[in-house]
Every structure is written in structure tokens, then in C-alpha cells.
Image (cartoon, rainbow, N blue to C red; front, side, top):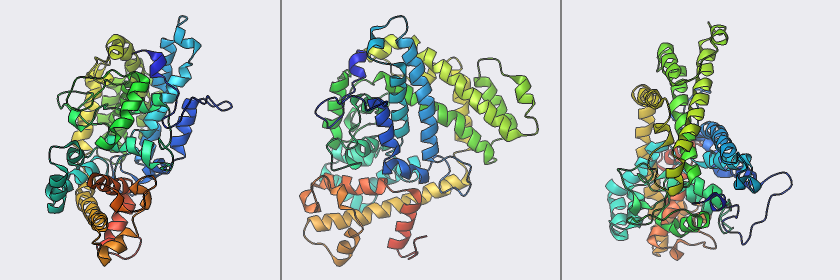
Length: 454
């Protein structure tokens, strides 16, 4: 792979490169398009760790995405500076901030396809198709071993994210938001379809696009020069900047989820302090830290910031230590697994997994999400299928008044124009795009639990 192709500034769905506008580069405009999208705004009410939290402190998917974007910008710019040092030919066509902008934008969007209730929402959608009798009927009709059926049995927010960016936002335009090829390639953490999933790997343990979006990703991969892999289904090597996007996400949820856990009184001050100090590889300003004594929240925030900065610096070193493998498409490992303080960094995740994620409030609402999302998919899919078959009941016709026709696809206004797989995707697109509270509200109203909007 070579950087000239990897940093392709052309836009999906556009005929030709249009250049920057004023002082904004094409990659900065990608960032702005995400910020102003409705899908990004909805992340303010989507779960990070604590679903439907009544605390105004803990993070949502929106704040997590913003933080990951900041970390990603630092990682990308630092890598860019090293790549372009010493009279590199790349420096004649690119600036370090361009790479920073690409990584920042991909990080900003990395959770944009997450359904309500986070990863529990993904499991809830897959569970309905696997276990509900009506869901099983759909899978049988699609063909249990087909990529279309396996898309639903292994519903993946990463793959949904590509649909959001390239289809569901600005659906009237070819290519959706029409982001640059470079940004889209960096966004796809798992560059394979569901048939190309390999559970023993790091880069292909999940799928990054659905069967319906295979051609879209192939266009992105070819435009950026990603190396195709010999595998069942469709699979490519990762874009080098996808490793930085993954690292930014890892850094934020390893380090920052622990801070949230402390604020929610699930992890002690002493434990968090010890864990953060173990990750920091450079001397700490102990005088400044001591001056915060009596203000434990400030001390934890100070250590968190230092821990993030330390792992960022270590990740840049890990990138260049593995540069040859990365550019050959051979690295099947996360950069954070190769950082100087990899073991204490992994310990942050282990403590969060044992003390923060299993909290009763988290588990209770995640469990409820299975019922909420399963019933919503069941109700709307039944209505859409009945309408497509010309046998819509009064109930189905009423439900379809609540179903936005934009999910049928560009130029389509009737589910009868769609295949079964396309109808399934229309419903999962609708439900996955809901916020946590909207999903709960609609569930309660449709099932008669409450007729109010609360």
C-alpha cells in the first residue's frame, strides 16, 4: 500500500475531486459533515456504559465519540509529522493535520451505527432473529447460511455505521454524506463481510459491512488501495489509519470508563490512582498533584489526562515499530497490545469489566433492552412484510404510518418494491437509529404500557 492512494481525497458518490473550500480541507469538511448530521446528534442519548443514566456526569456515546476524536486527532497528527519528516515526498501533497483530520473524523463516527443500549442492543437484535419464532421464519426464508441471514444473526453496529454514513444520512444523494474515500476506509475497523469473519483474529473478528453494502466498501477499498485477502466472503487488509482509530477508542474506554466508574462509586480512589499511575511512563508533576489534595475528583481527572497522554505517545511508537507490517497489510494486532505499558493498560479494562460493567443499573436496563428492541423489530417487520404481500391488516397500516418511508431506499415509497432482505434492513435501520429513550417510549406506547410520550 502507498500513502498517496491511502489518503485519497475523492468523495464517494461524486464524479471528481473538488478540492477544499476556503480555509477548510476536504478532510476537515468530512468532520463537519459528521458533526452536523442527525445521526451524530442522536448519540447524546445512546448508552456508553450507563444506560438511561440520571447522573449528568457520566458519559454518553456522544461525549465518548468527541473524546475519542480528540485522541484520534493527536494520534493522526503525531503520526503524520513523523511520516512527513526529513523531506518526505508525502509532505509535498499532504500536511500532518490532514492525517489528524481523517483519524479525528473516523473516530467521531466510530459509534454512529450503534443501536439503543450499546452492545447489548446489538445482542438484542441478533437474539430476536435467532430465537423469536417470527425471526426464525425470516432467517429460514433468507437461507440460514446466507450472508444476508448471518448479517442479522450477528448484527453489528460497525457495519450499521457504514450504512449510516453512505446511505441513511442524506439518502437522496448517492454515497449518503459523500465522505472522502480516505475517511471511510479509516472508519472501517473490520474490513470484511460476515462471511469473512475469523474469530481467531484481531482485524476480522467482526464484520464491518453488510451484504447490501459490499459493493460500496469494495469501491472504497479499491480507491484507497487496500490489499484484498484470500478468505471466505469479501475481506481486505485494514487501512493503516484504522489502527489509530481503534487505538483512540481503546484508550478512551479503557482509561475513561474507569473514571466514570469512580464517579459512580463503583471503584475506589486508591484503586484508580494505582491503575493510572502504572500506565504513565514519564515522571509525574507530583507538586501539582499534591496541591490537589482534598479534591479527589480533580486528582483522578489529572491522572486520567496524564494516562491518556502517555498511552497516546506509546501508541505512536508502536505504530512506527510495526510500520512495515502495517503497510504490507500483515499486522493482525491492536496497537495498544504493543505499547510499552501494555499489561497495566489491559488491567484498566479488566477492572472496568469486573467492577463497572456488571453494575446492577447497567445490567437491568440492558436486559430490558432485549424485550424493547425485539418487540419493536417484530411489530414493524410484520407490518412491512404484510404490506409488501398485499395483505396488510388495519393494525399494520396504522403501524406503517409511524414508519419513515426514507428507510425503503432512494426513490422507493412502498415495501412491495423491496426484497425480504431489504425489508429487514429497512426495519433494523429504523430501530437501530433510535435513541435509548425514544426506543423505550415507542415500546411503551405501542404495547399499551403508557400512552404518554414519557
